[in-house]
Length: 112
Length: 113
Image (tube, rainbow over all chains, first blue to last red; front, side, top):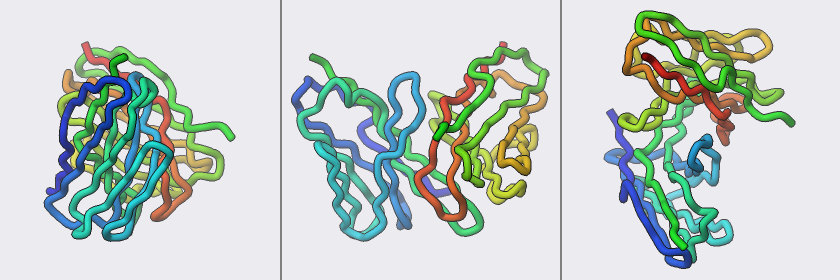
């Protein structure tokens, strides 16, 4: 079945450094959503990308959807301790219901 | 507006027992989905309910079942519990077909002894 892989699995950065996580699929994605899960918390929706080559920004976060719609990236500029958590990409499959297929996640740790 | 509420937050069971978890979606949301999260397998889709009907089902054995009531509240049941069923079970709600985002509850942490 379709798998959505994320790299890296873990990332430790110093506060102020940049961070990027990549999401790759073997098949074309209809859309890509990004979620953040803080330690001990639940996934929280960040953004959805639908169009080929789409780029969206939220303050220090930049989200991109690949031209072939098989990959996506999340880039955080100048990380802060509040960015700590696991970042998941996911494809929302509709048509006969809703189903989120999650990527493997990237766990981010930010050190002072 | 209250968020998604899951009860109980923590549960300890032994092998062979069964368990029922509950989820109250955001008011007005009619779609409720269930996910299992484990360190090894990550976040995996269990099933989705809309207007009391199961619309989607993931690749889990028949021991995992669910239902939805007319007020959109949902329950999931796991029978004949196995050690591997230890996980965080998350419920998410949305307004309906093709809708986003999915709003997650805090989950039920199930531990099997």
